[in-house]
Image (cartoon, rainbow, N blue to C red; front, side):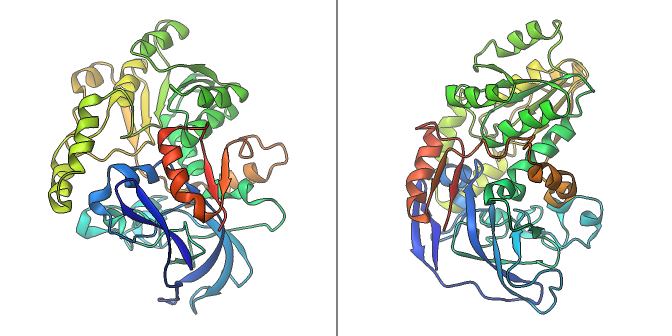
Length: 391
């Protein structure tokens, strides 16, 4: 089969690789019909290379048709249409039973001190082959895949794999009071959905992003938008009775602009041998923290900052004096996809499309164009907000 593979920093290639096969009774093989490039895939493209191996198959936002199931899979059959959550969970362990599927004790990558295994996401999360390919082996298919209907187009369902539940969890964790104000830093795919979800739940939403096309997309959905600047926290206070928003979602993560020192650290990591670079990431502060620090500055006293953007440094400096003085709550973590499925499925199937899932994709292409679209997405060229590949 053909698959999009990691070949080195900022180097992706479509290669012929062996077809996946059933390895465990709980496996399924899925023929991929749509698969998206996620903002967190750019971390593999740029920063997390020390944890990647040449030839790794990437991608963790797939859906498709069941081709084969293992002997222990009774909930699926050949021909079923499914969305595959990005985290691999058993559904039976202590963590899964408590709605913490991203911490599944069955698939935890203990040798790296990480939570549940993820599709296509480096040694840190199990080096499991990803979904930017023609076929995908799905472990624990007796629990993970989300069975969906056959009538609606893929894009109504595809984002249930990651970014839609990630945004839903981010807003739930932000816990803004009814009728309150939610700010969203970063209007990439997760930020777009976070803003729309906040609006859907009756909140006033302010979105912040330096990219005009992203602000324009958010504004179409009734979001108040601001350009990113050093004074953005002051602007938000002026818009909210001098206090700041009740809650903030940071949907940016380690790739934030405006942090030249951390940007240099990212470049320096790329020059180190993998084992030394891994050690540096595990002991040093390598994150670009401009968006997170702006979120902590902007949120009102007693408010909550919810992190959905991925951060990778172990010693990133935090303004603890300010955080303590302002009595800020901080919530974060990989999304527990299956925890939110039952709430989100009716919304994506609603004819009114209340979360605007049909207004997100800006670029569609086959696998062969994947490498070029990784570059375009990272550089935010050509209005690129969300890429869907169709093998």
